[in-house]
Each structure stands twice: as structure tokens, then as C-alpha cells.
Image (cartoon, rainbow, N blue to C red):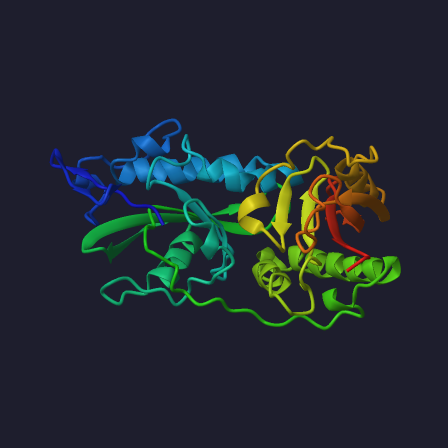
Length: 342
């Protein structure tokens, strides 16, 4: 996931804009044994010791996050050029069974499973990363784009949910060819295609909230990537045209979006206090409905299927509900909506 060149015997090898750290022994590699004190930023990663310090710092950073908004923001935090990303230097988080939760460089591979991923020499690098994390933190050597590289993986405990999560730095392989795998969820009482009025919308959203909660409470988030993938399948039970599920914090940061993940996930709603043409502050009302445990919001909104409604919008009905995980007061707001005139 992250590419590194190395300073070994004062020689820097720059390949395709990334830093490749050779797989020699840490103490023999000129960095010295032990961990470099203090936090190392992405731009400072030049050898194995610095890589380990960088990843261990990310581990401590994420362990300290205890809010739904904090978890939702991580996607943008890890992808922004700064402490956690410098060019090709970035982070990846995984479930212990190998599903990608956050990829600091390529969001399109999130929720894919890397267990079967091999490097250019056929080494099972996906399995090696999980095993290294299980050992309490360790290096994994692999070859990619003709260069010997090193990644570092370690387990950590989520400060929000208490689940075990894997933090990885230094892994640079292209994962775009990894297949999307999913197991269908049970058919809900009302599917996305069957949402036609307020009652069916509420039934649909409440079912989605239960599935998302169950996935969130699954051991070490093992079922959450699958639920997200299933929720995004167009024409499936959970997505049909403009009817899809999204999950947000009460501050308006998106954890999951069934329609436009690359546009919304990790970000706060733009202008959260915006009003429709009738003065309805629909985003604030939607968040309040979810925090209260369920409610409808009716407002005017641009319908992509209708030409000429950009200025005033078309009638839309949304429903939001919410849930808490044990031991936490923060609310996960789950919502969806439909255009009754369609």
C-alpha cells in the first residue's frame, strides 16, 4: 500500500516516485535497532525503523478516536497530503480477516479482501501482513514493480468499538484487480425497489439500520465490509436508482454512502444548515430525526431524473433512524429517501 525507497549505505533509490525499503535486517540496515523516538510523519519515512515508528504512531492516533465523527473523518485525514500521507507514502486499515476498511491512496479498493494477494514472485503478501500484525507488529518483505519493498503491520484496538483492527504502512501493490466478493444479505421486508410511500420507506430504513448495526457489532468488524458492498449493488435489495442507504454521524460526517461513496464518505455535508426553497433545513432535520430514533423529513431537492427542477427542486421524502453501540453515546444515523412523483 505504501511505496518506500531506502537510505541504505547512504544510497537512495528512487523508483516511480516511491521509497522502497530493502528487506535486510533492521539493525544491519543503518537505521539501528529499536524505535525512533517521537512521531514520524509520512514524509520522514526513509528506512525500516522510521516506517515502524510511522505505523505505530498511526496506531496510537486511531486508538485515541472515540467518536463516530472521528471515525468518519479518517478517510479524508489519511488521504490528505500531510502527516499521514506524502505522495505515495500512506496508510491502510484492515479487518483481521483481511478486508480493507480504509485505503489511504485508492478508495475504490475499500471493502475488498486481500488474503489471496501475492507479490510479483508469488509470495502470499496479504496473508503475511495479517500474520505480522497478529505477532504484535512486524515487517513484511515483498516485490512490486521490480523493486524489493517492506511493509509494516500491527494490530490495534479501536477506541470507538473496542474491535481489533490492523494498521499497515509500506504496502504499495496495485489492488485494482482484486475481485469484489460479497455474500448476499437476507431479503428485507421492503426492498429499495419497493419503496413507494412513507411507510415502505421507514420499513426499508429500519431494516438497513439493523443490518448495519449487526455488521458493526460483528467480531472485529468482520461483516461490515460485506454489508457495505451489498448495500451498493444496483438492482439488489438495498439500492434501486435514487433509493439507497447512507450512514452519517450527528455532526453530518458520512461513514457510508450507497450512492456516491467517493464524493461523500469521510466528509461533512457541505453547508449543513442549507435550506430548500421553502426554508426547510433538511440536513439538520434529518440528523435530528435520526438522533431522536426515527422520523421523516419532507423537502424540495434536485431530482437527477427530472429536467428543469434544478432551481426549485422536486418533492422528496426522507426517513432517518439511529442506533448506538454498547458503551457509547454517539449515534449512527441511517437514512434514505425517495421522490414520490417518480
